[in-house]
Length: 63
Image (cartoon, rainbow, N blue to C red; front, side, top):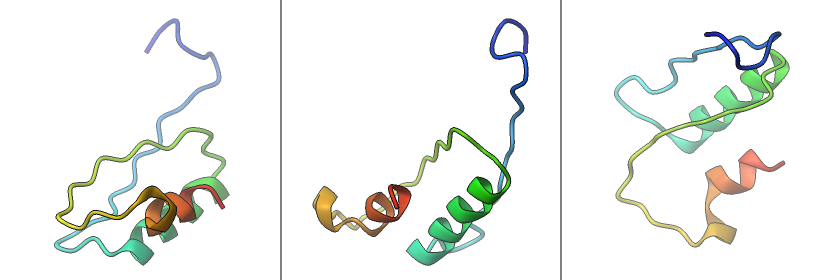
């Protein structure tokens, strides 16, 4: 990639393998943060819908 951020790197984590529990996703966030990742983007589909203030992933992502 050229012209983005000179010292940037891409870190990819495979998190969900057959199931994707909230605790697994939050553990991956912790791993990425410990690795020095500054920006985390995820794409996860679910049939569970929580209000933002009750969503375990939203709460955990902003700890």
